[in-house]
Amino acid sequence: MKIINPDTILSPVHQSSGSAIAFDKTIHAIGPLQELLDTYPDAELIDLPRNSLLMPGLINPHVHLEFSANRTELTYGGFLPWLYSVIEQRDDLVNGCSIDCINSAVKDMLKCGITAFGAVSSYGLDLEAAATAPQKVVFFNELIGSQAQMADALFGDFISRLNASEAVDREGFHSGIAIHSPYSVHPILIKKALQIAKDKNLVTTAHFMESLAEREWLDKNEGDFKPFFNDFLKQNSAVNSAEEFLELFRGHSTLMTHVIHTNDKELEILHRDGHTVIHCPVSNRLLGNGAIDLDALEKHSVKWLCGTDGLSSNYKLDLFEEMKIALFMHSETALAPLASRLLESVTINAANALGLNCGEIAVGKDADMLLLELDSEPNEQLPLHLLLQHYPIKKIFIDGKVVKTEE
Image (cartoon, rainbow, N blue to C red; front, side, top):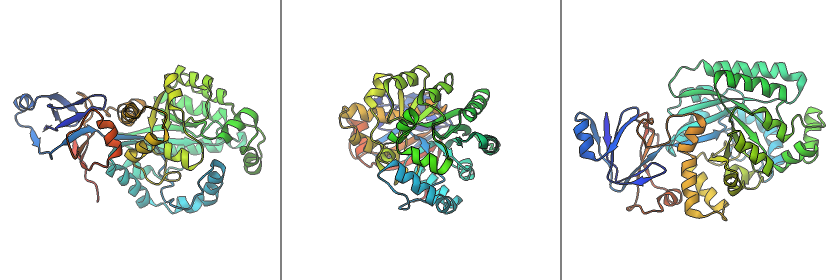
């Protein structure tokens, strides 16, 4: 048992001072320091710096690790130019990202305070790194393939990767299923994969309405995707409409990533079926997809999170940076409340969406915590200042143990 007595606790929903925390793997008690010392006389008391802040570890709900070798190889500014560059550079990027490359991305996330993440895996090349990561991981095996004649082969590969991830035996590692998108996965495959998810109670995720090209293709079989599908796959029509795609997920709440170009009816469906949206602001800007309407999500009572996406469409895997970008991207939204909602989106709300017992400083929760050193006593705008200032992270706890980070 350990006892920690920070100057300030951000739960993240509540900000308080004057309380200590007793914990081992989980948080056992929160209360006055002397009361906890009396209850746990043999506990180790952790020394803290002045102006110390304890908050939950951050949770990155959406990251692609297999393209972590990218720096300047891919084309930004528009979704289709980026997609074509991914196809052109795919082999070099995938082959150029060894286990050391992927491990480096995992370590970089840890340094930035990310104590859990959802990894969307296309090929299974990141399985070893995810299986041995110090963080909690939901490993989403991705299914892709819109051609019916290739369905059996693609599904067989998907099952093989899913089985490999389910064979991983370590606490904090969980298998999940990713459906790439409505334009890239045949409904037969989606139904089969979702049945497995329901039978095994696996968390699911998908990309949805990321680009205008996707909107036009699903609605009208027109737009920038038309020559792409004609040239690469000999298809002249979409395999799903947007509404048909969402209907396939009815009864199984899913993390839907991007969701920029949705209409009111689709937002109503997202709310009705309990789906959660993942907002990736840097990726959306770099790929020229525009900004999600967070106010529209909240108007329709759609839950949302913030994630980094992968290094194929970002320059770093840092949720503090990602949230700061979101503050400035959504300039019409009230500043301080948005900062609070962003912090909740990468802690308590992300944990709930991923089915993890963390993301909150509360009794019974896993002791996944960050100890930060502020430069002065915090005020009521602490969540905002956490995003604007680069406060040093002094300690990172996962399941109550201090995790070492390499400088």
